[in-house]
Image (cartoon, rainbow over all chains, first blue to last red; front, side):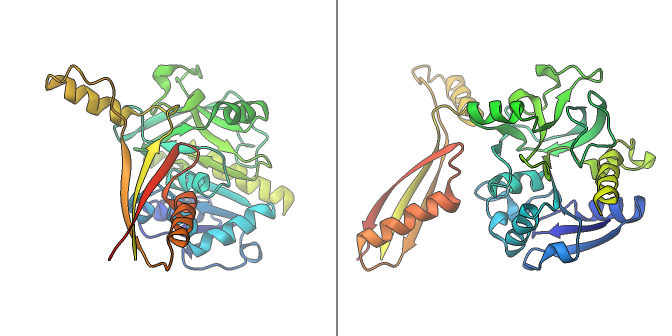
Length: 234
Length: 83
């Protein structure tokens, strides 16, 4: 599996993503600079938009990064069926770019939250969750001030009906409750896919929990799912 | 040259915790008569254009493309010609 990690000015989780896919999972991994716009499908199987504060989060998180040259290449890659995963700021960029519906707003309590969160896996049929079982609870940290997923009523309803919700914030037992929601997201949504299922956005950081040293390894399941999908289709 | 004063506001259907928090602060100061507070963004953009209509069209396009997010925000602007 060939991973491409996109680096914008202000990205901060690129090194963690690189470490996870290259060193922990032993996959071919390279960085992609935001000013490049190559044909990605020739060189990569999965593009990662990591977390951080691209362009300082100015105006709105992700709003300026989406117009970087690399993003037209990412859009082309996604429309050709390539796998794209946006984590935290990467999720915000995918929403701003229109590759995913909705928007990530300021957390409802206005606080930045850096903590472990429990995620209930809603679907195991996506390329990003095939190593999980539906209803499984993953322990993956969040670290954001703007992760409050919002979309209008009909959009949320369509997401739910089409099974595009990949993860929901839950209790350790997998109950989806208001108390388990760390940011005010609609329907406790922590991650969604596009309609085709090849683009995933999620606020929690799987790259930060791929080794016991980091306090947990549930994040590895996301990358293992991607690799498994690549092996099946590649 | 024109100066556009651009106001970006949250749609009325979108919750605004920042505005609510500011409202709480005003109440603490004793301004009990305040009904509600909504927060938004204000930008000033200077733009070269021969005619008002051209400047208007460009500012409107910028607001749609980048300056506002139509999922949660509305915008309006005032345009004045600079001498």
